[in-house]
Length: 95
Length: 496
Image (cartoon, rainbow over all chains, first blue to last red; front, side, top):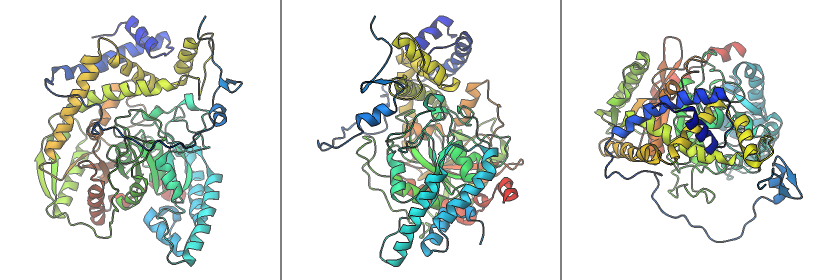
């Protein structure tokens, strides 16, 4: 089952990845080979088998609701690529 | 006195406590050896020599005052130089994860596992190289160049914790922190002739570890013997309020002074782990190690883990799916690299397209595909169901045997570029290590010999959840009667 360049572009779009035409060709071939290999799983009878998303027992972990200090705004913004007036600065989100 | 850099953590600890050596001497010896060999090996992404010497001086003050007061407890790793894989955050130190997208990222906080060791007084020499975001089996996907294997510099050290593995194998330190999501501690340990442990999922906090596959990621360590690993694991393990998946199970004190006899210990050998195409020297060395365990009194039985071959496709759907979600946070807004574009979506794409390397992009694409509408049930959901079958295989096996012994990898360290154009062939390197991650159980890699080229071979012990103590005791017992772990790469001898 070979992935078409359009499918690869669609996936790259969903993943927010800017890919070159060469990458689109390469990933198309490589992902097709990997998915073909992974398709062997579809031959396994898993009827009645629950999925495992975590090996831990599904319990909620609670803690005391007590205030404690965290990182300050300055510490957080210090590592940001671009800030303005104590906030993150990004390109326009709306037209 | 012998070279300080040849000391294990246990040996160095004794000498430090007695005042026979100082932490500054030990740290300087490490830094001197690093200066000689690092240009050849490239084990580090960031070195922190000034910080290390300052911490060593602090440790010496503490050791001196502790010696005056006989009752004062001295933490086991006080003054001990260690290295940390560059996916674990240390406040104020650059953390790249082997990625150019985090080239300028300085961590604002410290990972719990590392903090516990810092509280015990360790001296951090630097941050070690890794495959980008721990995705790889050779360190070749690092954005900072590959690390070389100290046993043969034309060969990879394994990965993704290859920088820590090379650093410990080259005697830069006796202890390296690593992480294991699909074999990233055990495989480099095997390739570099080290003892390395992947703990039970939840045994050690993941807080401050940059996430790859959150249901699989574990923090662990590599050392030159099981005894040193036991100290590190005991210090790092335990529940952490900052990681809801960390276990509240009490952490046992691992006492190796009373070595266990292996009498009545049942060891299972899974027939699925001896496959056609694996290097014959590897299976021979593993069989030989099993015979040694038998002479120590263990009872050996063949077992079956029928879904072993499925672990590879299951892992390479689940881990990339989790990675594609985890790595969504690298968007150029809050930290790291930012690409330039006129609108925000374009900025995200430029940032990620330029910042991530090819293996990371490949896995994000694979994971996004597996999770996308129309394919979720066929790929991701089916993989999670087969994961259940793999887990059940182990549960069934552990009703019959106490531990499982198997090879770590199908071959010894491969050459650079050997799998460069074939990602699937690279993924096959992980075939024997992935199942333990999918089942959440611990695994210990132990040196078991060398091939004809002089490259190390490892054997892997896997046990039920929270059986780290048993695995380390078996490893220690094995290392009392074998000397594979005592061999030293020729590279070090010629430079000393």
